[in-house]
Amino acid sequence: MPYLAHGSLSNSNSSEYLGIKSILSSKGTDILAFEDDGKIFAYSPGDIAWILICSALVWLMVPGIAFVYSGMVKGKNALSLLLLPLLAMSVVSIQFWFWGFSLAFSRNANLFIGNLDYIGLENLLSQPEETSNDRIPSIAFVMLQHMQASLVGAVAIGSAAERGRVGPTMLFMFFWATLVYCPLVAWMYNPAGWAYRWGVLDYGGGVTMEICSGVTGLAYSLFIGRRTGYGVKIRPHSVPHVVLGTCLLWFGWLGLNGSGSGTANVRAGLVMVETHLAACAGGLTWLIMDFRLEGKWSLISYCMGAISGLVAVTPSGLIGTSASVLIGAIGAAVANTAVAFRSRLPWDDGLDIFAGHAISGAVGVMLTGIFAQKSIAKTDGYTIVDGGVLDGNWKQLYKQLAWIAAGGSWSFIITYMIFRVSPESEIKGIDKDQSGEVAYDFRASVFLNEPLSAKHNRRTKAFYSSFFLRRDSMMKKNLTPELIRSPKIQQGYL
Image (cartoon, rainbow, N blue to C red; front, side, top):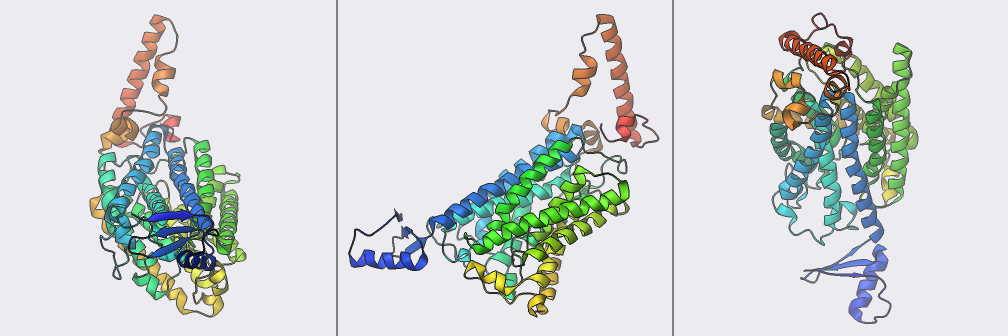
């Protein structure tokens, strides 16, 4: 077991401690980890605290995406979209503890995947993390990577909205994290990975997080098919849920991007400013584009634009502030255009996961190849890159495009593991069918239990029971506006 020491060593004059003090002064640290074999590692308490705080902020993004998804669907499926991201977080975290981190970050990895040296997080207690210039222990880095992996799973699982079975989806998430997410991370963020060695620039996970989750959602949607009644406009059942989720995502994204350099440094502060600016630009861009078409200042439009701007700026931690505003606006504009063409495409992506994450993420990765600057990269004190097109490095652009193609293509290998609920369960609602609970039981509390006279109450129950039986029968045959005349059904409330 290692021995940990903290604080000043000024009271000791031994040669051993004088040597330790020399290490501390050169590294700017005051935490030590002594290994049994005599190795000495020096860590920065400020950097450790920064990474752990950022990890906690990233965790907030999981309930954030859950609230966004829950607010965007019908009320009868609201609980399932709160449950699924939390379950995805749990499953992916267990997978990452068991062998996911080792597959992605083991030091004896090859160009494509790691080994099982760190299975069960063995041998990581005080080992330094090389991607942060050895200023933090690997166990702190593990926490951050756990949260990021959980977030990707939570985003991708939204493609199961209103029709995916809970049990098979959880099994799918374990194998998806193993076969798709871990290899992508190993390619880009393990120093032995081919993308890392080739010089691809993807600061915060434009491919590993955004394109991976968006393409996963696309593949899931293609293989489980459209929801019953696809084509009927569905209105968000809870706009406040969407706003709350967006605020949690915005707040957490500052930690997600701010942690990208691995330490608390100048570039971390710059990236957080750029993240905020991109979200603002994205929200305003989407809002204005929708206002031109509908003449309404939509709160949902602003939220969707802000999220798209955040997605687009995720890989762009090597750019200036002006470029971040431009990337946020372009990412939101392209995603908005993709959403407009959604109804013409052969898949049912009701939550716009592909447009909002894969498309915006691809825009961010590509534009990073243009706007990346080596003068900004080195503000963390140790990163050296050739920059992008602005620095005369035209080759960087095709590297970025190749990285987009490789990451997006690889993500499709998960499609054979997809499962789907029956049409009857979809009509009943995923909440009631899979969880046995409902978020809003208006039918029972409002219609059937009103304090009326016994005679009138019996007639009321008979009328509404007959109505819902007839409605369910029509929905099983063919849910179309022509067969079902109820305005609430046509507007997507039921």
